[in-house]
Length: 67
Image (cartoon, rainbow, N blue to C red):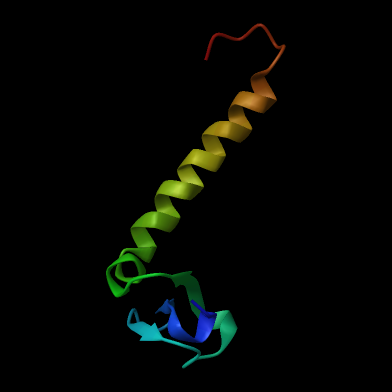
């Protein structure tokens, strides 16, 4: 499926869009379904938390810390 047929979350309006309706800087995606796009804020939060945890684990590696 090409990106113009996928769904995007508009960061400015909070609306789900199909295709390239708004400027790239205002979009998160692409997503395969409108439902996934609607969950974009939660997905971004979950991914950011996971990345922060992975980064912390790398920073702690070899330090002798049991965190």
